[in-house]
Length: 113
Length: 111
Image 1 (cartoon, each protein chain N blue to C red):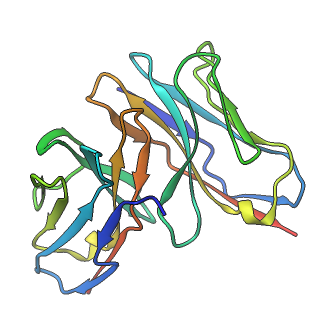
Image 2 (cartoon, rainbow over the protein chains, first blue to last red):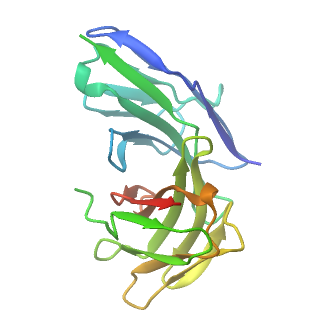
């Protein structure tokens, strides 16, 4: 079946460091891919998305490219801030299951000054 | 603010009891998802409704049920509660681009 795998962390970085959170997926069709972010005590928020191969989603300095050949959607940011501390979820929209969204386990990121 | 509302924000109840969680999507959103988030299980998809009808089922226990009403708000009913049901319960409304807008969640504590 469809699935999403991502590094679970926790990931701890110093401010201004480069961030990569790996995400790979398995899907039978042509899913849309998403990154959601959950700040402490809040619900999830859509961070960025890509709907087809080679699309790049970007928002707030974060970006991710939909790589069909490697079935990946890695999240990157060139210079993290303390305010980026949160849990990041990779997700896919499964076209074979009435738009059910499948989430990865989440990656906790802590950015220290 | 996503525009999706959930009530109550917190709920404390005893084992064996039944509770109802409520979710109101944004105007025009036909699709509502329910998720359970716990420390050991992560974010688990429970069930999806689309325009009043059940569309997809995930890891939802038989003790749990949900429905979506004509005004598109949704309720998640949890019965015969166990300690292990303590978790955050989120609903999310999905737009036509498959983007999900999460509510703030209901924190359920079963004692």
